[in-house]
Length: 289
Image (cartoon, rainbow, N blue to C red; front, side):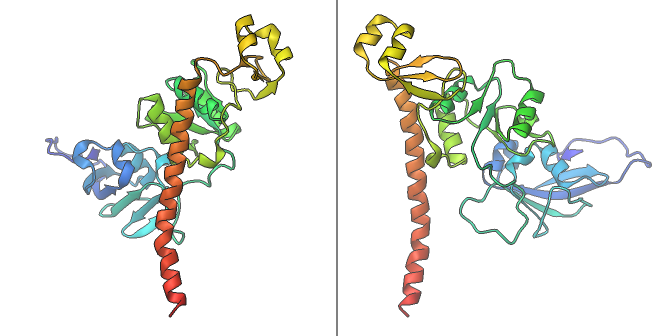
């Protein structure tokens, strides 16, 4: 069963469940998970039995964590809705500006604090997120089950390039990174989770994720080279691993990461203002009539 094609089939077993078909259409960034020939268009999906719409969506290739709204024949449904055949299914990602409150929203309520756990392939992204002040768990030996445990027990958002982990039914908060470039990934995460107001650069240790606090030059002296002590005045130390930080030659590279995140945040604020402006103008016109 699956996406319909022109392949030949052997005679049907008369005792096998009846084959049924539903028409699917995925919108916006959900098309990233589809083969090219099924993007931005309706297509038939074949199945047997009575699967849930969630099972079909994930069998097609889209993790449930990316879906916020499902319409079956124009009516909003939840993930447990059973397909019987003949339905038209429209699948949508998160709505950022549209008011769709009367329908069944499938994304869980955003976490009060944006904390992350990143898979083993996202080490550089994890370091950059820590630089920006975000509590981000990462190890190069983290297994999928550990990642899921961190997500559930510590209410963390899973960041991954592995679609499989996001299809685990226990996962509630997760995101599949489209880009493979760490700087582009920073931009992607800040934009998707609207992190601009939460940026707190240099407040976390890039190595261990601990909290970083200012220390005096006297406290720093035993832990830094003499030349560094003589040149620099401001130092910080990780409260967990004891690593000491100062604004060294690497500062320009780190500043580029911070500026990238701040630029995304500024663009999002401008975009929201632009979309609110017509509504405000309309209200003003109505008040003058």
